[in-house]
Picture 1 (cartoon, one colour):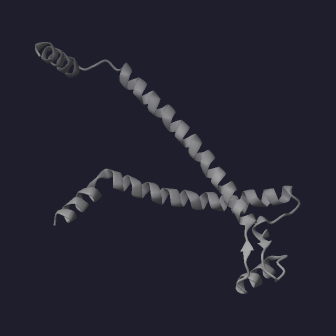
Picture 2 (tube, helix red, strand yellow):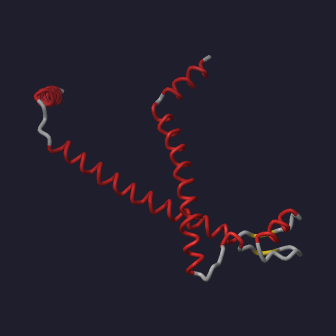
Picture 3 (cartoon, helix red, strand yellow):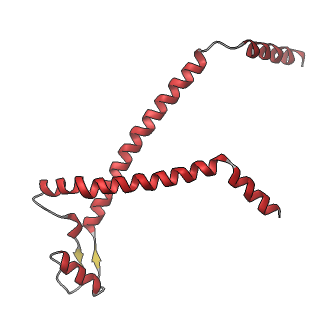
Length: 143
C-alpha cells in the first residue's frame, strides 16, 4: 500500500507532467523536422549534387544488384545485407536541424530568464520584505 501511495505522489508532482508534455512535443517536433528534411532539404541537396537520391544510397554486401529502388526492395525481400549510408546522411541532417533549433531556443530562453532576473532585482522591496529582513537581522544579532 505504501508503494501505491508513493506512486500516486510521484505522478501528482508537476515534473512528471512537464516531462510527458516535453516528450510529446519533442516527438511532434521531430516529425516536423523529418518532414522538412525529407521533403524540402534533401531534394535541394540532391539537386545540388546532380540528382543524387540519398535514400537509395546503400552499400551492397550481398549478391543481388541494387542500382535503384526496385532492386533495393528485391534485395530487402531476399534478406540480403545492405548498409543504408544514404539514410544515415538524412538522419545526420535531421539531427543538425534539431540541434540548431534547440540551440537558438535555449539561447533565447537564457536571455529571457536573465532579463526576468534583472527585473526582479530592480524592483524595490515591499514593506513586508523590509520588515522580514529587519526581523531576520535582529534574530541573527541575538544569537
